[in-house]
Length: 206
Ligand code: URA
Ligand code: SF4
Image (cartoon, rainbow, N blue to C red; front, side):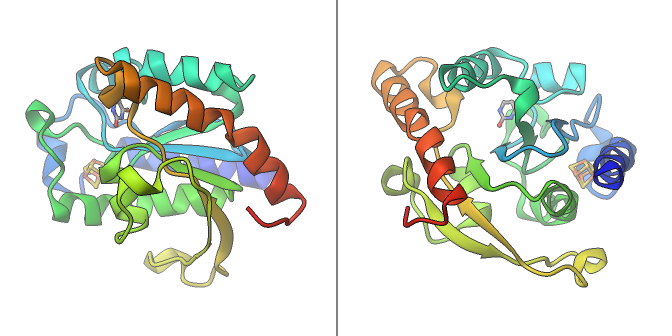
């Protein structure tokens, strides 16, 4: 157990000084992600915004406040889960990350996933969903659980066995900030999470 925690903190530390893609020149701070090293649930957003870039922490702006409320709505706290992003440095002016930036950053997230081995990954929004499940559409995939076998692709992970992970995509909290009906859908989807975890635990059909 100790080793697992060390290794996740080690990955976060290495990420903080990463210079592998062009976003290194425009970022203020890397946002590796934060949370429990043994978390059952990982939330994965798209990339840091202005506040995250300034603080070096994920989801700390307005969308982050909503994510906190959503997490609390299922009787959990931020400290009980792990929160990360597809790219760990802010793209200038919040533009979409470029495919090569996403591809270059991917091994960091993969290492975090293989260290934490969460039961459930919750991609937030269509960009995050697209990276994990390229054929899925957020409008039809949100609020539905999908069992997968998650295979490593990063060079230093190739000796790892694939892990069983359930995906449960949700809309991005930022999209729900000024859209009341999307906000309702988001809370409604979150209400299903405890049951999904229970079914995973019992290896029952989702
Ligand atoms: N939006 C994201 O996708 N990630 C963050 O960390 C903050 C806002
Ligand atoms: Fe490194 Fe990812 Fe930041 Fe690019 S976005 S510099 S790959 S941490």
